[in-house]
Amino acid sequence: MAAADGFAAFDPLLEAAGTASPWDAGGVYVPDHALLARLLAVPTQARQTSRSGRFARAIDAWVAHELRRAGFGADEVWPRARRPRVLPHDVAELLARLPRSLAADVARRLEDLPSVAPTDARVLGRAYEKQVDVCVSRWDRGPELLISTKAQTSSFGKNLPNRFEEAYGDAGNLRGRYPLAAVGFLFVQRDTVLTREPDAFERAVDMIRTLRDQGGGDGYTATGLVLAGWDDAAPAATMRVADDAVPDDVRAPQFFARMIAQVLRAAPVTTHVAVRQRLRGRLPAPGDAGTGAV
Image (tube, rainbow, N blue to C red):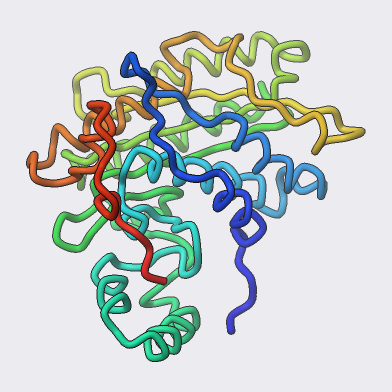
């Protein structure tokens, strides 16, 4: 058995959260910010907010979970809620049809075959290969949704230009090869930016808006900004995610709504049935959203 990956610590939290529809009665997307707070508390409590990558993994796990809440299949959304984190839908279908003992044996072997079931999703862009933090893809459709996430917990003003440059280049690289896909950028900042470097927060908001497609086809389909905060003396007990200070047009709800809308707009009505049903307020029949076979 391969060693535990960077997402393993989040699996119990994701399983306990469930995948209830994120749409309220008025058709507004309502992200599970409480779950994001619990996920972020794991690396923060361990003092792993930057170097280990676990803080970023927590964000990726949350975004993927939100897409499953929206109705995308468990094996279509990468990283998956269980290992292997990246598994082609058709391989999962095969495993579901194998005898249980054989399926379990094959599944264990898959974890030692990164060429078949890698931890990270990598796609070829127009100019270079890109590791995508969250992805919705099937071999018969190709990548339909690609999300890059970034986190910033300190040195806000100093590092922001680098974040902007990287994000802008990635948007053009991905949109150039996948013009119909929903390509998004989600930025998470520690809320101390509001008091320590308010100018940097204003620049971040402006960056989020500027990175969007302005009509030339080289910007992001959707961008979003999330603020997370905690007390360093007791991170797990004080972790919070609040968007009161974030303008409506860059908050997480509009980010997910725009990304989902683009996927549905670019795909035939016979696809993503569960997503369409949840959006319209009609919950899918059991199994429509897709269930993980492994």
